[in-house]
Image (cartoon, rainbow, N blue to C red):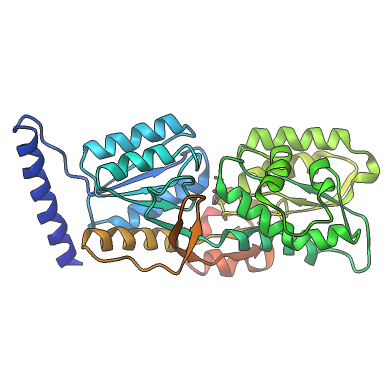
Length: 369
Ligand code: GAL
């Protein structure tokens, strides 16, 4: 690592000299090698990523991390700010995959290597690499959990489905994975969808086109927003009759939306039991799982994702080609990608997966057994 640091320092010094010369000595670029841009501080998921980045980068390349606060305009500005500081690698998790193409292109024009982080930037060739979890598996794990909790032989189980933001490519991958597992059980009458006419219209089709998924997601989207999720769940429960309730199954796309949807279902007197999925292993959701208010989450070990992104960045800075394991098509190119697996967490393995593994301290929770 020492050697790489030296290379980085030397390269940065050179760059500084070059920029001073270029600007006629009037302006000096400050020394930031790696710029990181994350979507928002308002969701615990991205605060996790920030913490893990700061841990992983101690003593490594010169880094600056900025949040876009759910705004693609701010995101573009953040990238421009980082470009003026002379970054050579940009690690960016886009707020909106298509809108971020402009920011990626601006970076590319300056010769910066662009790493799409967790969410894919779409519709541009200006993305060099992608580090991601296996997002299709996330959806499959959520759906499989619901299937595993069916009562043997019981048909007509009420199913409520929700999705992420349509501007996030991951929302499609999560839904695709979930649909692959749920659809056969919907087609044979085991589950009955209660809150999406678009999904009902497509329920005999296992492999959906993106435009078909777009129609369903357009109807069941939470926009990754707790308040949107809460409102949608409340509206769905108002529209449903008592016989659409009882023991219900809920596909919720992530932890934040799961908590607000679960709160609505818990309040409804006609809901006798609910099973609800989640994603991200956010601290408040782990407490919900311990308390029996959320059924499961999909644990995405952010330490691994951060380690992969940092390794890619330091490889690029050292002039090496980063290791990738596959590729994702972003509608303009196959982006070389490094992918990480995910783990289903429920009450019975919460302690082993998240506490004993050292991911979270036990003191973050109450009632842990
Ligand atoms: C996804 C991400 C998830 C979740 C969600 C909401 O793109 O992969 O982990 O956090 O966004 O922000």
